[in-house]
Image 1 (cartoon, rainbow, N blue to C red):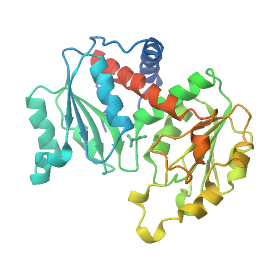
Image 2 (image 1 turned 120 degrees about the vertical axis):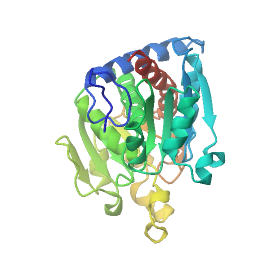
Image 3 (image 1 turned 90 degrees about the vertical axis):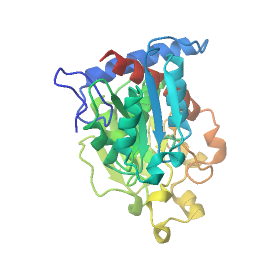
Length: 313
Ligand code: CP
């Protein structure tokens, strides 16, 4: 997988792994600046006025697709929000040929979500210099911009503290968000991470010393600074293996009693989309400890940071 050029520049953002922290430090610094500016106004800046950006989402999305569109527009780029169900891939054209076609029209940025674990990474090996692929969600394996916006949110809410206890609860096994979060939070040494959920939704092991796995949700939440709940990825689980939603909420949903196990100033996060009263009690989604909409808000600034940084490379 090639994300970094021979000259050490970041050409593509495919995964968190394999990228030096210095690149992310710049992206996060830009994102913080944009977030601070945009608290007051949503002005367009012209950093990307000479660039064209194609959004190619082969899976559904609200947050990622719309925030990349807004981010590119706020940087002055020309944006093509491609309706993938109506594109020539439905007539047998390969996604790579679609990219070459759009590249021939002068497209520089390809923001791609695809159900395949590997396709986005493979496409990056076939693009000309000057083109950038941003992975907006690849199968079960990686969703790097989500992990970076979650890191940004934690750092802003917790004032750059380290030694945090972070509990991540839910469908860990099928989550591309968690894969990228573990790489990202470990790179930034945020603290200890505890993964929890029913055994059928947990991996048997993870390759990080600061991460442990437990089926005991009370243990995971106890004294946590950050609690992150995840959707059950029904689209990746055979129908006969899907948990019953009511039973799941009883055993692994966030309730007042469970939230009380965490630190009093713990923040509640969820990458979205949320299924209310399945992963989190509905009133806690909107409660004072929830930063779910702050995550969404930071997502626009963070994606502006990614686009601006790639443009400079
Ligand atoms: N978190 C996330 O990727 O949400 P969307 O599927 O709405 O983009």
